[in-house]
Length: 227
Image (cartoon, rainbow, N blue to C red; front, side):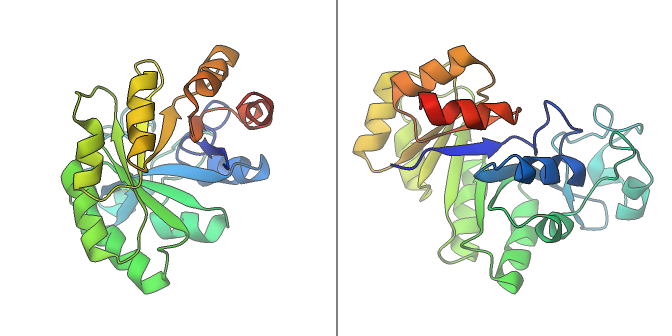
């Protein structure tokens, strides 16, 4: 079984998150895939940012959805980096991507790009929103999808199956062997997030996970010996 190490918003532990600089650093570190987050701007651009507001990660204020792409471009996203759009990331790195739909409205825009650029094999799509996972699966034939959960009930595996997800991405601090075994019995992979310490890596191994999302480049190398 192949163990995957996924760079969280690039490698946000050492670079400004969700920037081209962070994504390039993740690729240079040899991450198996790079995770990023998607919102829609006021004028419909597929913007790479985690939060619904720009306040935490830029020098600006306000909602992403209330700003045009031109307005977002004026912001400093850290170390002089600018807020990227999804297609710029596609062109900046060649690694597989895991695109998380933060804003459900972004699903259709993401599907359009994936169909136009034939990305079903390169881009895996994830979301906390069951509806977004189901929608992207319907819009993009053959796309691989991931259902994410930070807290969940006993039905999380059934939820993933209901929307056609092949993978569950679950909070490592709440993950139990029972859930992992149930998912594996149903043919689902399980990824733990966010794995940033040796203790987390030991837990990854004990749980028999299929992969881990991490903020730090060195976790990839360490993970090869512990997972």
